[in-house]
Image (cartoon, one colour):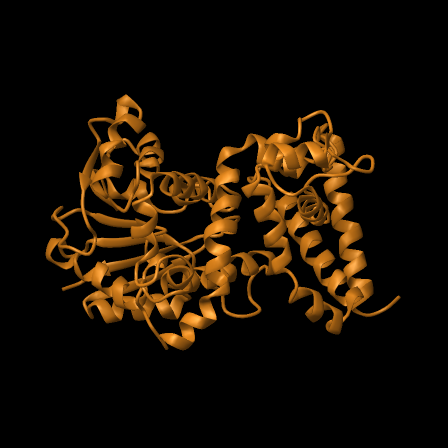
Length: 422
């Protein structure tokens, strides 16, 4: 065999062998969708060599699959992929994972009775979910868990993520083109696919914030995502020169319960922090942090569309805040910092930075560009590439000097930095 097929099969063979040898040498469990198999890829993210091999296998097998399917069939079945969301929504909505006993079987009749749903239709949807390795049918008419469905039984944050994506985001995606037609080039969070699907003329965060159950699910889902592969806080902690700041104040804007500041405080004892967020969020902040950091981490209610109250800090920090903003509101947010900034103050942003086409790992690029489209669906916001970040600061004020973007190895997020030079 010659050509691209040969290249791909060689990559798969050599890199799989490298992973297998590592697993054998370290006594790691075999990868499997059996419920007793590992729930995650059981290699520390610090092992760059093995994770690079893993990515090579993922990308090569994906391309090989598409070549084997062919362009026409690839288009045909890609257009049908919304059914994957539908069957997962059914599993979530009817709580199927908790109805099926972990180490036993449940009949479709039992599932239908427990979920109070039509047996014929729930069977159809579960069997579709099985094509994505959610559950299995060990004998006709009975359902048992796989490793994937087991996660939807035991991992509440992942359950929240699936619920958020399937119940909130899936309908928003279906209405996004309608919103683009109705509100051309809109930067308003009230004119989105989400608002058309769920709450006409209202922004997503306001609607979710008014509903305690939805707000709790959203928080769990975000915890699942931010703790997922490539989003760990350690990349931020280890990849910016925090030590060089000496005794300094960091203002974490939109910092939730201060988990980033706790991670920084553990490693850099000279730093002090102010965590800013909505009143209900920061009210719980002090109880969420270790007592040993109580004198170094302060919580403060603040709306980042209003003037920044903490003056003369060394760094004003945003993690996963800017991508929720269109340029209209992102510039407004940055402009509210200006009265507080001393010369040389830094704006540090931990967020996505879109790669230039054909420059990034395809797996990572698919995830990041999916995040970009999601921001359009939900908020009329966006992910940004380097040029977009430069433009955002230019629009905010010409006295901001953009210093660049850095993506730590293994991280899906980048660190953007600007300095205030009045």
